[in-house]
Length: 482
Figure (cartoon, rainbow, N blue to C red):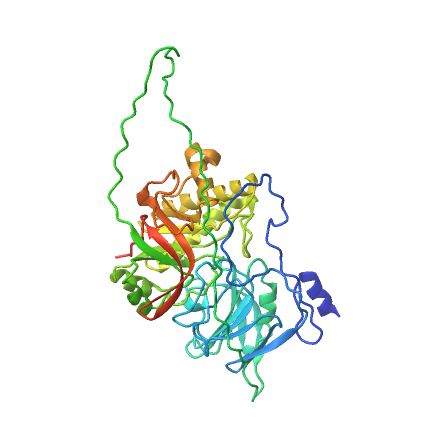
């Protein structure tokens, strides 16, 4: 009875016998009414529905590689050893058994994080495909005598892990979470050796992933302050004409075709795709990363750079308080501090991938719809992000929708509203199927712009299929450490 009461008070769940599942924590700020409602681009469409609550009150046992643990009965189980192209997604509840494949079929638009569990055999804890890097130590939060191990939490990346066996022959069980680690911690605490002869958990034949399309986004025109045509102190009736010299010509640059996807493709895929593309956007980290790292490593970065690829390193951290997705949101009361903290983590990730100073780090701020309070929190967050990233010697960049994040930054940069520090470069999403950078009256020159002009595209080149968003790149790309 004491155990049941304690679980109810802390919001955990009790596994075994009669099971009570807690409602997952609601995203921060979701109940807040916006001060002012305005039209903005919708959030990226999801390839599968993600929720923050569950109605199930039962669990099921999962058996793999000689171990057993219990998860909510509604969570699907994916056998990566049988279906290696399955996308390891962190934005929907699921269990993944096996090592992520080198050619995962991941929808490009995945962003957000919720409770998932991955059992990765033969992998020391902290390697790239399993989540955090070895140089990101966590905190031990619970001993697991049944498997002679501990649950380790990385609060920055919203991950928990358990190392099983030896560092060379064992496995890692990785759990991700959005705002509340209680469910993942409880799942990991049920790990034990499976009884002899217990059959491993199977998976039905998966249905093919079909990303949902979306119509083109409209352009929201931002009215800039007009140029003055009078001189202070000169009588108004004098015939005065202020002639401004023409602006200097922009530096020469060449538009490049590119694409971005949720997880780094394999090197054979990259070589086949180089025939049609020259730049790629990849996620290097962030608490709202929606996919496993897959092939991404410093070695991968160096190899693709040597094969003349340009890379747009992207970090996806806390999102706007009025974002409609599932994951970690900006707290308006500490937006600047959170922006600084996210920048520090992004800099650490960039250095781990051998990205030298002078490289851009693009912050992914997904489309949002909200009022003045939400906009101000976003601008305070991004301003602090820009300042911290620039102080470390990196080029600052922001990816967002033309109708929300880009429009808000545009207005703030041109009017000096909110004391905003603008990024050096922007990567704007406007799905009009038009690969041009001359969209609207943007504050940033063409050489500091990249446009995502098409999304949810399934394309095959050289026998390798990817789920991508298409980009036209004029802005900065990565430089590697010498």
